Length: 518
Ligand code: SF4
Image 1 (cartoon, rainbow, N blue to C red):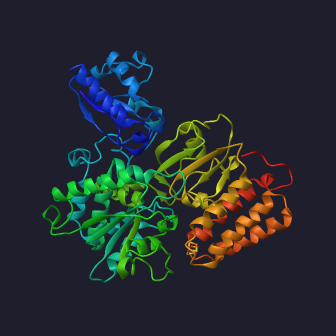
Image 2 (cartoon, rainbow, N blue to C red):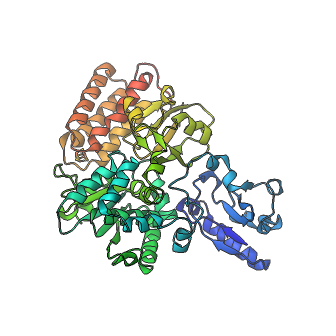
Image 3 (cartoon, rainbow, N blue to C red):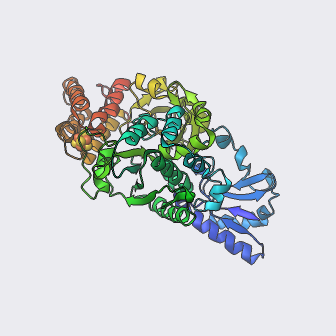
């Protein structure tokens, strides 16, 4: 019988290794023959460690299962695969039937939680490398066209059309080109990149290989934040496995194409998620933002034409090639095509990963998936798109996830992370936090961000202390205006998003009435 216990860092943090060891020990003691597979996480974090057993009808789940509950599982006969939902208090029935999973549209995350992340055989058995095989038989320009036709836009936050970026690099003349993957996932409440790298790393490796073949780049780098040791380990193991089987390196699958891939560990600066600061860091320099132009697509890594994409953008590519642009494009709304793996975090009952086509509303995500607040109090605000994203009030919860619809209400989709706050939140303190975050993470290259954020914290302190509030609020708005228009990169120019959204949507927290307690 095959038993699955996730190896994702979320599951590990909740004791998955101990649970797995207890299952192996108990099976041995009872002379039960089991195959223990360490799969990725399904992304339903409140159920981790989620133990699954393969049956003829599909996988049945039990969770969360702690080490001390393992003997009870065996007593109930979970290893026979015949246990029904009533036979054990933690029995969940067929995992695929859990509404949180069933209601999703998992295109990219289709293997996540199902396969052993570093098993190439598992990957191949689940549509892996179909896209690469197709790409090898195509002209580079045709690959770029397919990606353009899919409507894929940068999932890291900027939402720039991926195919257009690739076309620029394809057209550039150079002796060397690069693919740089931004895996510095530093936004609060985001973890979809981590899940790809830990739970389905071949998908990213295949996407980068296709990108390399498409634009004529023979080298790629994955810039992974140092706080993700499991991602780094899984990527390196998967890269070795792909190389050994001829899917990476020289003469890929006998095609004469070459693509070398390397993982670079980041040094822990939020600003290195900005594409040009990331390039500086990969080159071994201090992570400082470069002025544009030149565009990295023409003069990027080591001064050479470079495709820079985020993990989710690149790992969407195998699917686009294997199923076709038309298939992918049929999901979504307006100019936001395909799906987005959204990350539910903060004060929610059911935090986790939800992949849905663009068009799903914030309310559906917060209530249908997230189950409302963990505290049971009404949700008052949601920050979407990381620490530089706007705070959205209840009146905007019906906004569909769509780049343009979000922009129309002065918000950003960003990397698809949601952090929910209940009514106890103090929005003036959240606005101060945004300024303080910018102050701490500013690279220091330009004045509006470096000095502006420091002055911003001071102004917020005066507002919170109720010192001449009307004048300080006017000053805050002026300061935000300077930061938006005068900053060199998104760090400084987007910090006003959370600050102004807090001020505009929650003016009562900046007024003369007493403030709610945080
Ligand atoms: Fe550096 Fe901030 Fe200027 Fe960006 S906006 S270049 S992070 S100082």
